[in-house]
View 1 (cartoon, rainbow, N blue to C red):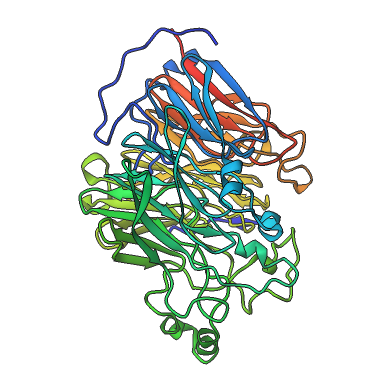
View 2 (cartoon, one colour; view 1 turned 180 degrees about the horizontal axis):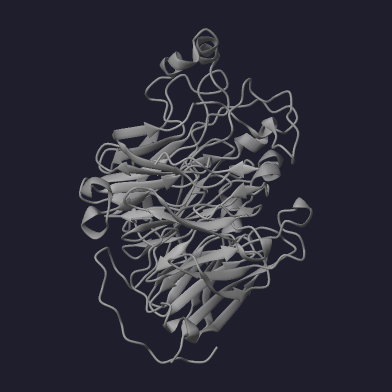
Length: 544
């Protein structure tokens, strides 16, 4: 049993009353994975609350092949979203009609024919949330790691640039647009490619970059592109440090952008030799300061200079060849003394002290690690204010991934527990063996509540907070240990901010991508990447 005892600290509805604008940015849109460039998944411009919830009804449904895996970006009543069937879609969620759709898979193939090795581990699609800035729509692709620019009115492709040339590089992070620049980090499928026969692993090195787009020339310019590992790079040097979850967040006061990084795949021989010759307490000296592995990193928006980084666990190596207990075996190609694959699977959320009850009255960033530990750090220097263990990391999918939601007092999370091991929720001490939704205090990280996902189901969805409600998806059941068995149906689970489930809205297949909320609408994507399940983009609306 895993026991957490650690606190390291359809009808046309009439319009309801419009709340006052929030302080952040244009409140007429849900912008990208995290809702805004704060990446806090906090919908402050919505009429949805525990009183109006009873009038929430389905308004639109648009079926898609395979499914979706990311929230939309919205502007002027149009939702823009990608699908695992290889499409980019513009959909009018007020009039319930398709505006346009573009085949992203065709664009990827036109850029370059994918190899059989690439197709074995990566899909020729976009799985990111779009971003809209200065009249341009941006998305990122998996195969070829492309950043694409489109005309949001027509779906016409305006420009393409490759963010990383490695054959297994991919863009799983969603981009962030801020002040004329698009920020994006690179991830990799090389961890999985380590399973391929005759593949020599590993050579990918994670990067984080800023691009600008010139409307008159129809082209991207690389403003800066930072490699997050030191020389030497490659098979005999440093590799890994993927940047892969949610979207970068922005601190406009200090003009910095925040990301978090993944693990190394294999350690350089010189580092392994140093570790073997050094006592445990002294092994940190074996790692160079500029190896940004399993780290929270703040970079200067203008130059890409690293302002600070905070590393939160030993820099141990891991690839898929190391296996997952209870799922896949460990192979001989696993690096020696592998770590637990406890990288950061989300970018930090930026929280301003002027609008929230934060530690030390400071601006902070909040992020979760796949180990299950949730952190709050000073945005100015990376000092850790608190760290709280929330849930078990029961497989390589991780305990905390893809993002949290933060309001003025609480941090909301989904404890995934993908392998379904037994653990105790806090502070109740209830024993469960599935996923849980939860909240801790933003001020000090103390546990407020954890609620088991209904019907012994799992959830890997990031939560969304709106007024006194938390909205989050339900994924698959634990029958037979399969990730998406045919009898799994998802749902939108709506809790109050005290953790009580108020309502479930059933959908016909799994949910993985998070929920967007704005004004009187709730926008939901279903289906993910499992070809047999299909999926849909569903719009719910508040009605009088």
